[in-house]
Amino acid sequence: MMKTVFSPLHAGHSGQMELVAGEIVPGFEKPSRAEIIKARVETEKLGPILPPESHDVALAKRVHRADYIDFLPTVWERWEAAGKTGSAIPFTWPTRGLRGDVAPRTIEALLGFYSFDGGASFVKGTWDAIKSSHDVGLTAAHLVKAGERAAFALCRPPGHHAGAAFMGGYCFINNAAVAAQWFRDQGAARVTVLDVDYHHGNGTQEIFYDRADVQVINLHGDPMTEYPFFLGHADERGAGPGEGFNHNYPMPFGTAWDAWSASLDDACEKLAAYSPDVVVVSLGVDTFEKDPISHFKLKSADYPKIGRRIAKLNLPTLFVMEGGYAVDEIGVNAVGVLTGFEGR
Ligand code: OKP
Ligand code: ZN
Image (cartoon, rainbow, N blue to C red):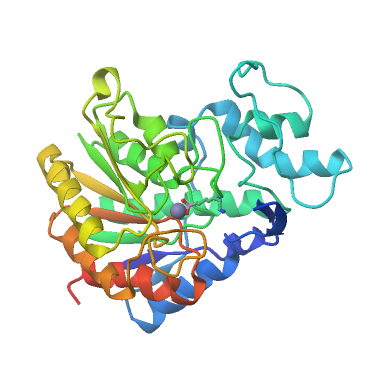
């Protein structure tokens, strides 16, 4: 039986708007995603569903910049105090040629200072959801540390696009990175983050890029044509002491199981050679053929095969929920990975 950790507080992050193809629309990253996965955990009898314990965000500051983590809980009150309504969406960024080293003062400016796109927006309940997602990840990590073979952190909002000092792509705190760091702090010599979400986990890569103690492996849509566009190429192999410990598998639109699973096999060989004490899987199921914002062609029957391949590594494994936007099938696909891992 695999334990799942889930918090109802995710639901306060609701109604946030998103700019897609020239129109402001309701965010794809919506509460029903987590609720449908939770319902599938129940009907599949994966195992007990536990609430998170509260953990100090000091742990998040081990991978994020302290000023960024201190900023997140203040966003909504500052937005309201400035007389603004709607969703707090970043809109101006310190890109090439501008100063990225000076934090300005107004909430509008700070939202841009602490983000790389307009995809992570706030409403009233967003901070409580972010904190609950962080707590869900760490509580599930504790279960694995305590001897569970695997645990499922049903995180929402997701985390893998969030870097040391920026949010973006629906992500605020990098739940998988925080958990990986926590395992290190608890005595794990080496940790691998295996990111199977359709989108490149640019935040996770950035956080661990110059480190040898956390291996980061990403399978994703080729950034030449897919979001987040500006990271995720095959030649990004790590820097300094981290050289050789970052592995990217960019794949073209239309990639289906045969090619995708060949990348997974190669990734698992590199992972096994690294011989980590624990694996953190950034579990996105937006590789699904019917995902509304993605372009891979995995089928529902493929997800248990992902779980079986990861189980063959025979390592303690923390599954951390990331993306997946085909809500009708998100439960079947996400829980399919987990039941596949359990050998059923
Ligand atoms: C978050 B995760 C869609 C543009 C992309 C952001 C996608 C964030 C995905 N037309 N918008 O990796 O699933
Ligand atoms: Zn994704």
